[in-house]
Image (cartoon, rainbow, N blue to C red; front, side):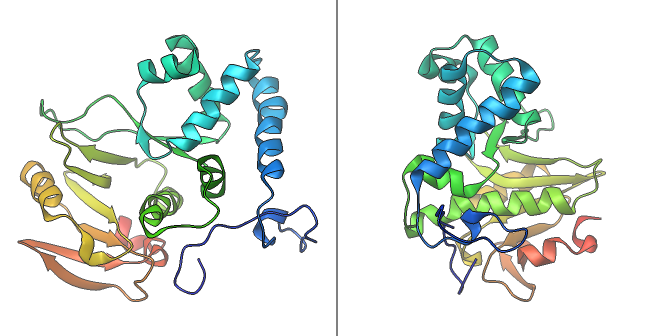
Amino acid sequence: MTSGRLDIKHVSRSAAPARGSPELLLADRVEPAWYAEWLDSFYARDIQALFAIRERSGFLRLLHLMLRQSGGMADYTALSQECDLSRPTVKAHLEAMRVGCALTAVPPFHGGSRREIVKRPRVYAFDTGFVCFVRGWERLRDEDRGGLWEHLVLDTLRTAMEPARTVSFWRDKSGREVDFVVARGRDVDAFECKIRPDRVDRRNLDAFRDAYPRGRNFVVSPFVDEAYDFRIGTHAVRAIGCADLMRPEWLR
């Protein structure tokens, strides 16, 4: 993040990296061949060696598709049809990507209601730069920033939380959803990821708190330097930045 904006980091083979810093964090322009080569080497070096996967082209098609759809819910049947792979093969490849840290699967949170999504995880790619590369984004539009910010908040939550806790998402069959939820005993905390804190949809929070009235409500924004409290309808909400998430009191 620079100058209050979310920017894509570009890569150049000619960039002279500082000690310990990869080229793509220092370059000022995009070189697509670098990204393509890295994805190919990820398969060849890590995945093939660890899992003895032989369907190279099918694996790479699925990896590119998951990068393009990053942040969406995984539909194994649809992925199977689009990549021309069997459903068991898709599940095996996705598990290999998860173990290889290319993907993070966020499970749905549910408490038994038949109106809640209970099976399909939401899958996030390991790096927003590769997400932008596969989607063909060289410059970000305003509508692109929210989804990428969601990736960064997820990474921060997973880093800050105690290992025994799980980051989930919540969604019902009417499409109302909360980006991330974290259970603390009988309490369930809600985390919405917004570039602007005032853009939270009250209907989503109303539906979630009707089902789970106990817990705290947070809006995580890149523009919040100091946490503050406000209200959305009847709900008390705290606006915080990612730096605040690293403070242990938020996740106790």
